Length: 91
Image (cartoon, rainbow, N blue to C red; front, side, top):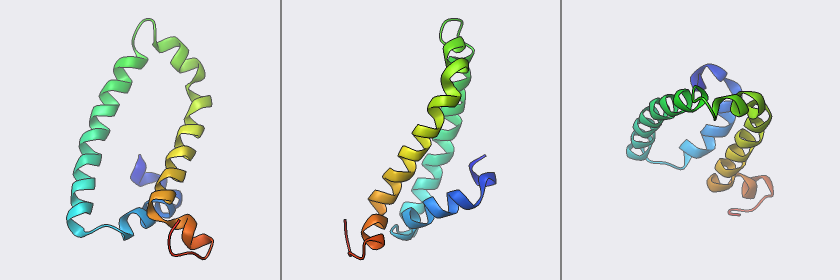
């Protein structure tokens, strides 16, 4: 799903990968694959839980955008993109 989303992910992940070595990128990719599988399993289990599933299905679409925007801002901050935007070498 992440690879299929396209341009917005390129804009977010490019600064993050630009400051990493080849070894770090490989580690990030492996961790990403393992954690994606783990999170999919956990999410499936939680959404299908008798007590937890109903509220999550009812409110999840409202919370998701805030989580994704927060993640994007964190990645841009850690990559120093805000400093570049403001004309500084670091933020």
